[in-house]
Image (cartoon, rainbow, N blue to C red; front, side, top):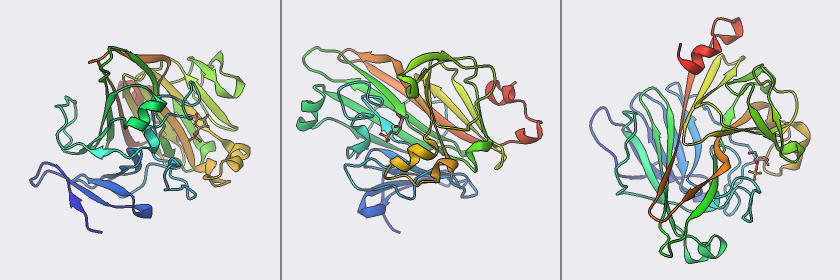
Length: 323
Ligand code: TA6
């Protein structure tokens, strides 16, 4: 596969960034870190569909039934829910960002991050005239997707209100990440215990999670509120722990459709719920409000580390708090 090179730094320590044709001829950006990890981002939706470690192992789940055909969003990877999470407003479910064509931003404003990653792409979404009929606001949404030297994947969103009429706007948001897991019934999530959540399966009634790590044996669709900045997903069978770090994103959604609901989703395999778990860094309970000229930033960093949690050797507190 050959493709166009886009703006990247060069030199032996730099990675590569190429634009190639993906499924159904849709443009995708392939990021390769020199140490071997990689990521793929479709311009359609600014949708990350692949994140591989330096052994070429895929970390994200994408359904075998995913339809890469606009206007249908891609099932799996990291859909961007903006400017509305789920049906919490008048727009289509999860907003429109995931089914718009984004552009490569070759000249983004400087972005301060605490990573040394040199392998990244900047994408931008601005509303068309038709879009402003659906959501009557002017904005610039910049997304940087980067793979780092330790194999980490980061997504940094910057949303700026560019309304000329002086009006503020509000939005809700999620990085709807689908993690690939070996067997959902062997997965634990640490970092959300004892927190309050809204249960989507019970008309978003508010409950408090019990003290134990989350495990899975039926459908779950919960919005955890005011969560810590680190969440760990422990895959017992793979002996792998995903660490989710987030900034500017107080909430976290946990979703698995389980068997019945899986059957009702046309672009999702009947058995695929066993091999995925969505843990979504989000801002839902308190919508973000921006006045003209103001900018919001929401950052997600994902890493995968080997874990020996199954043998009881790894204290989840160490994963979460680094102690
Ligand atoms: O984030 C969880 C959720 O809002 C669920 O309620 C579920 O429907 C899922 O997202 C998938 O939504 P989608 O519109 O992609 O089918």
